[in-house]
Amino acid sequence: MTLAFLYAPGHTAASERLTDDLTVALRDAGASSIDRVAARNDVAARLRELARQARDANEPLLICPDNLVAHGSLLWMLATEPAGRSTVLVASDPDGDLKEDRGRVVPAPAGAGTVRFLGAMCIAPADLPLLEKVADRPELLPALLADGLVPIATRTRLLHAEQVSTEAELIAAQAAVAAVDEDKARLRLAVKEQDDFFTTYAVSTWSPRVTKAAARLGLTPTGVTGLSVLFAVGAALLFWQASRIAMIAGGVLLYLGFVLDCVDGQLARYTRRFDAFGGWLDTMADRAKEYAVYAGLAAGAERIGLPYAWPLAITAILLQTVRHMTDTWYGALHDEAAAHPGAQPAGGVGARLTAASVKAQSQRGSLIYWLKRIVVFPIGERWALIAVLAAITNGRTTLAAVVGFGLLAAAYTLALRSLRALSMRVGVLNTVDTMRHRDDGPLVRTVLSRVGAGWPLPFAALFTVYALVTVGVMLAGEPSRYPWLLAVVAVPVLICGFPARLRHGGALDWLVPAALRAAEYLVVVAVGQYGSVPPPVVFLLLFMLALRHYDLTARMEKGAPATSAGGARLGWDGRVLLLVLAALIGYATAGTAVLAALVGAAFAVVAVSDWRASR
Image (cartoon, rainbow, N blue to C red; front, side):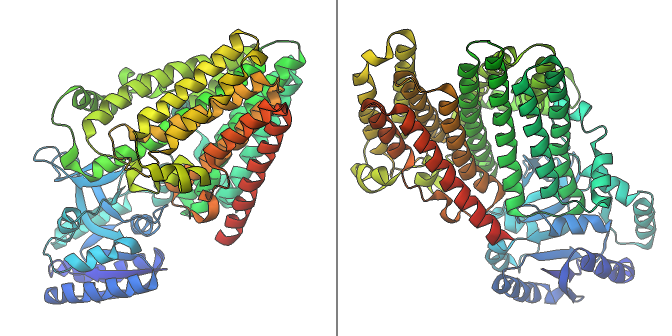
């Protein structure tokens, strides 16, 4: 439910005629009650009181000027922001006094504006105390921005909205609204505005028709997500069969599954049916589907006698999971920098890279724009590569290509993002429950972290280097000759635990979760080499660990409740030490399998419990 506040920015004849239309639009947007204030001098007191009521009821407050002419869908979009964050209605305007940065609205320096405010906004419950504080300011949005609000931008795009003050402006605005097919525009707006090359040209050109059909059939976004999972699993099973017909069919199924993967989000945006766990499920399903396909390709290659396929699959899942961790935390860092414009770089390499990136992003459709989007090897390009190569080659070749392009993308993104991060001068890991996202266990939380010494990122990086060297030594020689090398893992575990309680606010500390993931996964691989663990068992443990770690970040990204998902029974530290101990006493395979079962069972119990609670 949503409370609505219809205020008068200034009495006009046009606003009197709009009141009834706006009241209907606000009701359609989900407003449970509408408080209208016609007298300008009553606005502050009534707004503060309504904000207090909304805060007590834990409901958002939809604020709208009574001289706004707009498609009703725009007010609906304001009231149904997917993650329940505050949002404002803006229109693109190169002469505006605001700027949209990564989908958020921030103040803009003179001459640098990209959007202008259209008077309507929806304030999330968490931000209502801020609204109460500035309710008596003459310019509400600038006051909120100055006091720290960083709202989401709801842009008009294909729809229309404007504030009017005269009869002539009212007539012209109503004509502009009537000229747009609102349902057709909403369907097109359901497609992401800036997507990847393959998705833009091979999926989004026709997926809105599927979205419309799904809406007519009454399918839910979650139901479409389930269908996409079935298609991906079917593709993995066909890849496992490894015959040419099966590989071609698997490639087709994989493509269709990716189309459905796009449709579930489009359907959610078209019908405005959002919930935190739906977004969480979509993220988790994406990763699970991709990694199931890796397993299918490896199993199929092994089936027809091609060696080294499972090692490639293991490398692919390790590389892709670590890359996703860096993507998540760099995105969070960028959002944090946008929320603190004063911290933005004034010069240097990072500033020049940022300017170049912004310029490339502004040249939509150009060669440099698409190269910038392709070089990071996003999911659309990965799935397209897998589908095509699987159909014309084999699983081993396909996995080798995924690993090769993944390594290039990782090198490119890590280098450039690190340089830009150094210039941003903000931290992000310190703004959340640091130990939770490090995935520290009881050993680190209650014992090691009390030392409170060291450096978070350098120690985590050293752990990664140790694990990488250990894997290299195990691959190069006779693994059973190096039990001492595995036993030394206790040293990096200790030194990584010491700074766990320290503030992770350094310019590059956002890399700590990815470094710890890389180190833990490499230790799993080293144990697999040392104890001759069957590669599918190693892959299974990495798969379960990836689900756990995606769970942590997906809950943060989608605004899903943290609940018990962060309460690690072992944590990375406990898992590493127990797994190495099992290998040293001769039970590497059993230890790997049992740990996979424990991690998977813990993830499933928490996921099912929270899913039921969300329903």
